[in-house]
Length: 115
Length: 111
Image 1 (cartoon, helix red, strand yellow):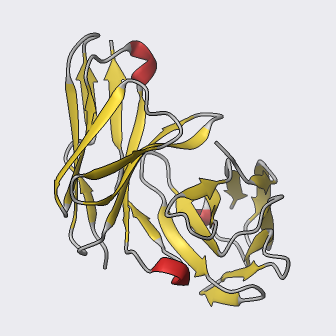
Image 2: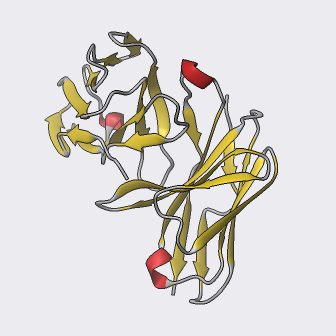
């Protein structure tokens, strides 16, 4: 079974703090993603990475950065946390199957509260 | 970003009833995925569809990839209380690694 593990389930941070959310997958997947999920807005893509050291902006990258130094690990960084970044953050990964279509697997989520 | 039109937004049913929900789009997709999310947890993949017209079952769940490639539906037969949760559809367009998501259908099952 695919395993996507997010290091922290629940975090409380202060405004202005630098926040790191870590994600590890154990299936040697090429693609990794960070989403945030908010009531009424659904899942929104922040960043994704299709290879080590490669990244692309998603729909809402402002206020976030990412790091992928190793294939299995994808980190989301909030350089200076703000209250509007209070949300549930979901990491995901998928195999690169090209035109065959990919299936994305999600982690359990990280609840971040910024006070 | 683009989103899929998922309906209904919520459903309240009695245990034992069948459930149907669907997703539509104005664009063509080459992959349709259905997920279930329990409160406080990440989405769990239920069914993946890769070909137009494909009909796939997973236990009491059945999903179909629409012939036009612009829609998909998910049916749940003989619902039970543990079916409660939010069901999401997701689609992938050709050449893109990113998924487009519906906003979810919240299912409540009354015992």
